[in-house]
Length: 88
Image (cartoon, rainbow, N blue to C red; front, side, top):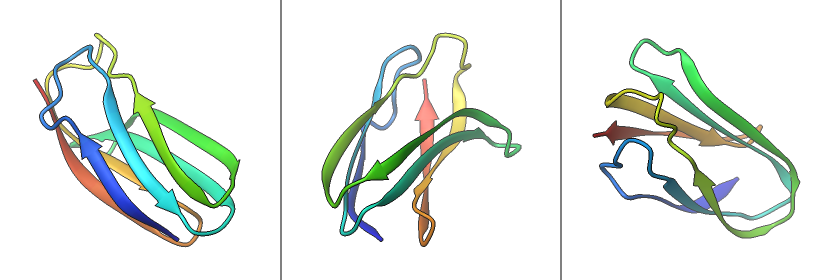
């Protein structure tokens, strides 16, 4: 499982990075997906074999992602969390 989840800045400006700060308490794979409001995945990454610890991940928001509302789904095989993201 994971804890201490922070996503910033909110809102994020188009073309600027989004930072995810999280902690996991045991080794696992960690998946991050950025989805539009229809549920289409516009960006995804899986970080395999993460060891227990605290991490910061930088998710680039490419210029080709239009402004709007998105959902950021993050998690392990055991637990996921979804956060609303606004791209301006």
